[in-house]
Length: 63
Image (cartoon, rainbow, N blue to C red; front, side, top):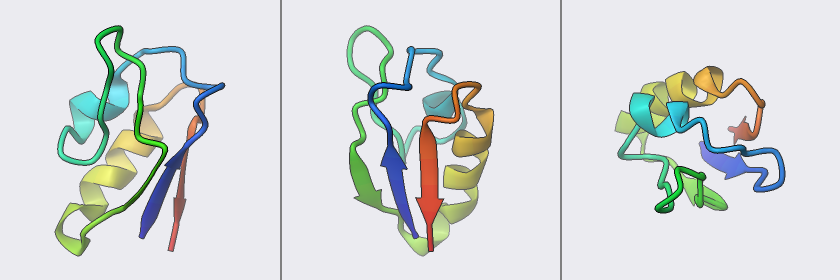
């Protein structure tokens, strides 16, 4: 699975990292700076929870 973050849609709610801190990286202001990352199999469920928590729908997951 790959997680991709649309930097223009992210407004810094930081809910993704609250749900999946091992998957999503934030800057000092709370914006997601994870441009694209391969998600290890053991973190896929966390990645989904983090993506679902984003009210801006800035995170896309690709199998």
